[in-house]
Length: 206
Image 1: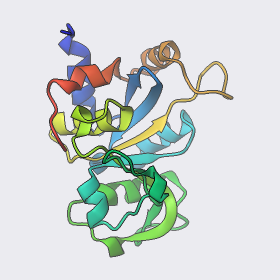
Image 2: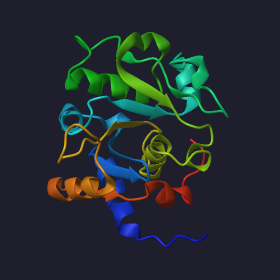
Image 3: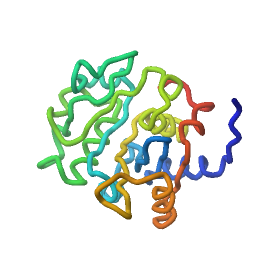
Image 4: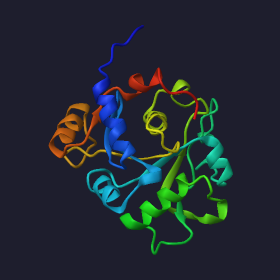
């Protein structure tokens, strides 16, 4: 099957990520705000937290999770080479309670730092690492893998902060793709529909 893509939404999303700005990323089953973890600022993360569930994850390659000693939340999360959610963390230094936007931004940047070591993180914490499929978007067509792939395309470290977007119409549920697109337009945020299709032909393994 050949998918015809308009490159403009992808280019706009990559430009935003390259400048540390959020994008709205939609897949058939989810809509999320995504930030490049390496460039996560307090202001950008506060925006993400305000309009999302508040549960912020950081998608990372599995080898980085291993290097940082981030075990899976439960052993049963491992299947077909996929690990998923890992034990939550806070930065070991430079934070207070760990829950504020400033503290979580510090933790997120620490997770993206290739020089970080296990001792640079406290467990448990307030930021949830997510180990993506070993083959990235080529192995699993899902939002975390797409987010990491987009950061790689933007020539940033393979680490993406993400939080699921809450419906602007009904805060008791998550946003639909249509609501996500309307939200992006209202806030001037690039939106990438069917992002997994957009990056699958241009992203390799993380």
